[in-house]
Length: 473
View 1 (cartoon, rainbow, N blue to C red):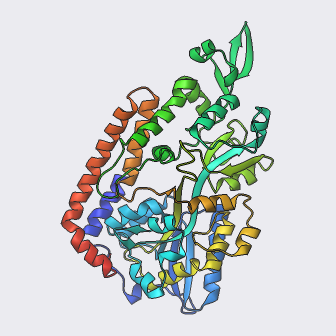
View 2: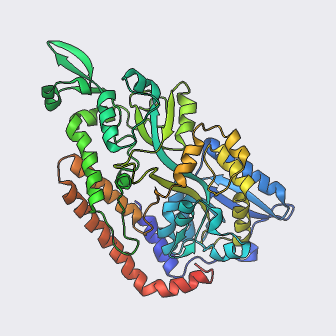
């Protein structure tokens, strides 16, 4: 299903792109203001937070009126609208879409606008600024960023005899605490009993004839970053040039760690436990919120769901454990929502004026405060921290600013690569291949796609770069 719109866009854009627009195609309000159409993927309170900033922009001047529309499946609709020459003026996307969309000529380069406006990377958190660029061109400005870290349940720690103020910092500590926090149900002496995994006999552990009731931690909940687990083992996913590094020792270690959970607790037991909460993330039945899992890897946004569905939860957040905390402290994955100007937008200058307004300190802080996230800027006001409702917002700011903050590979096949990596983890966990075999297969498949993309770039890259530097996608 994804291939169709991509193929359509490639064909349409590569064969001549959108038809552009004339003055007659522009829309105006009754009082003569240029209408900037803005598509955004947010719903609910996140949409309301941006609408408040849009309202501020509309009230700040009398030349431009931004009309925001919440759009579901925005990635697919963005592709089709751009290919058809009828894109919005501004779109709210995700940073992972920059490389493939830029390569296909679906975005307007922002570098000329930024140079004229005097906006530089010095103003932004370094990891976030890196994400906005592809082949040396800036394609977007951020809206709301995120970093991810360990969230843990203090009550479950305390009842298991652990210090609720001391979360694990290393993978070894995570594994040891998991054994104490995991509760299973099994038959003993003709009776059904519950026991902590650490209390089982060696024979019971070997037999794996039990049902998991609670777990300390499982890497498949929520499982959104499985393909990037290597980051917490010091892995890189590509060499920054043209080579993917799926089979690096660090990635192999990460897959061994992941598969180890299934080996220790039993594949069927893990699957049965996971099946009991699949699909219930934004609900009181979320296994972290209803206290069936004591530790979870989640983003800064998790506070919103705790506050909404489990305000009684005793919790805290910190950096996720790494193999060696003395070498790689505060390792995290950073991502961000972005604002872009599609190719063929009717009002690119007015669109950038709005994007620039959003990125002014007081406006970006208002947006990020409304979404309970942190600002993408290096500097923020004292009020932003003092008034922020998230009790651990400084933790996620520190993670985003960490030298060990990681971002997704900036290659046009990043999403396909991630799918291959996730499949590799699943194969190894299911015993269908060794970690090295599974990763080699994933790496070869993704490398073939990247090589194909690079060959295409060798033929068109010089022309593309010339166009991009001139501000023409």
